[in-house]
Length: 338
Image 1 (cartoon, rainbow, N blue to C red):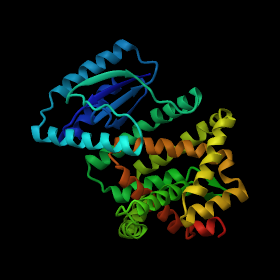
Image 2: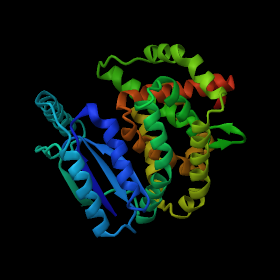
Image 3: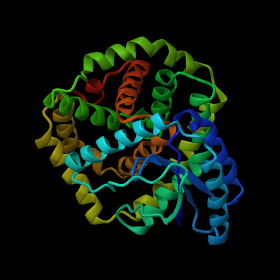
Image 4: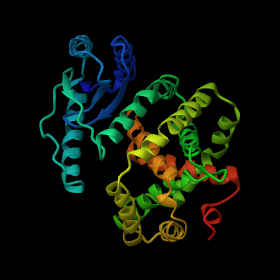
């Protein structure tokens, strides 16, 4: 599979340019998905299915290069982007111990590269790619709803996250939202340790501000949201059995290690109670729960395309889990029997 990386440093033209990229990508006539990254500079990456011919991909790259090069960039904007990139490189080097290219690509440049995404084994890697291909059309609907129609993220995104969590139910009850609680409670604990200004009280205040709007939107039967629910439900149903067949003992070891890490690495109430719940029920060893981890990973991989930042992701998953609790009139403590 090939990625076509397109470097556009003009924030003002981003939405219109994404529409152009989609228009051109559809002409290739194979499945594709679009992601974003800051590696080598802010860019869109269009990943095409392996059936795309090299000549067709080169033609797409040439067309989109002409479009990108035609975008005028204010010199002050370029200086700002380059300064952001320098800070990002330094931060990743320290926090993630990861090498990031120090040299930025030029605005308007286009690169064609082999896709390097890899997840555990070739079959699981292929499944994640396939999920992303199938998800792309509904992501495009959400993107333009947010960035062209101007819909407020704090109502729409938590509701969309909630409906993703609904794809994992056990005995008729939503258990998918546990993943959101784990993610955000870990973030809040680390924020406290690092003296960062993010607290559960602030997140709760934000949820209360938008709670009515989330519920009202959920009650509308919005056709875009109904499509979102349908696509995620089909993805979950289609790949669950195949994921089960391709999990080996080393992958299950990573799950067991993750539970041990939760036990020793976090002291917040949720993680301490959840580890006990896991040991009593074997929750994370349940194959449906394991398949759901793939669903959540694909959701998180999709967020940069929608321009949902890392902080907004944490806020929205908090709001999603609180909306789930409110909707069901049942807290996570009641759900796990605390």
